[in-house]
Image (tube, rainbow, N blue to C red):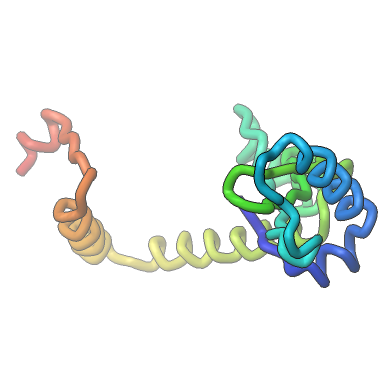
Length: 155
């Protein structure tokens, strides 16, 4: 997942990381035939990327731990910048930043709302919703439907 940051946000919250990545970009600039940093740090696209370690007990851990404790244990994050589509650099965080915690909390709330919505539906409503979603997917390019023999016999 990627959380975009403006230069102002990045330089205010993570000035040492911005300086480190800018030094790395400048060091690599001599290796390029074109000027990489034409406008300085303001032209860099700053972001935070994060991902999650998934294991056999992840769902159980999520229920037992607070969101902050779960994220500290299972989420990894890094601060990065992109000058153009070829020049990237990043620095890992030792501790999960607040932006990632906020994004994870928001995704948890969205997932919980979806679970409640699905639980409140009757079996007929659920089947109609699934069939509607499948109908829209079937016309999209690249979608492949694999049907199990038992599913076909049941119709």
